[in-house]
Length: 250
Image 1 (cartoon, one colour):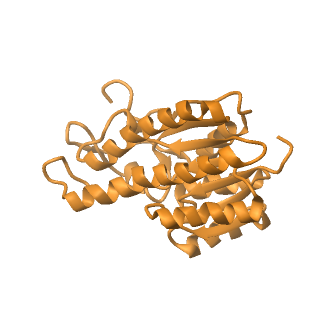
Image 2: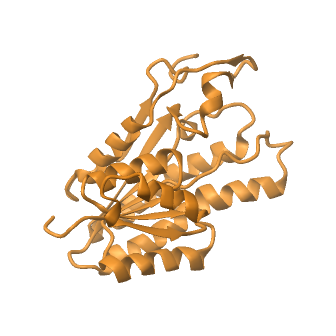
Image 3: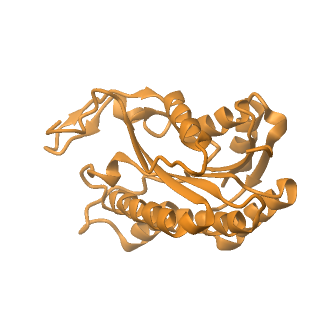
């Protein structure tokens, strides 16, 4: 790849998105930082090595016009996008299928599924048109794309659906040099997962602390996926705390 690499990272104002965005900036990428709140995005940029290559674009990923404006801004600034890290997401309200409200269901679906669709929609359109053609999308799935936690019906359903989205983008993108992969993360230590280390609900209803791992390792994994030539692709990567109760019976 002879041109300077361009990435878009959604949910870049905190947690995994912040760690990934800073790692990509440090690695030489020009990075568009997308998220709902401008101040955390600016904090992500200001705390990064290579902050002069950051573009802060406040974006609500559930709004098609806002997502279109995000990719228009990237195109205007840099002319292309090589990597979309489709990271924005929410745990949403807790609840089982009989207790979760329709409104809370829709809010979670809007962010975790429709938001990822909209970002991929506009990214792939640009990737098809640009020269050289093509690019890579990395979707943030979850361990919940494989096995749910109790009372997480909306979150688990959307993360299972992200797997289908990943597979469809990967299939449909083949003819256009668009690669798509998914990273399923379990218990990376961020602000959003702080409670897991003190106590998380298990399948038997008990509350037990679970191990976590440094979120920097997620950024390292994303960088590895992003660095591959478009002739190679990591379709699915699962990254968890080693002792997380995921495999087997916990």
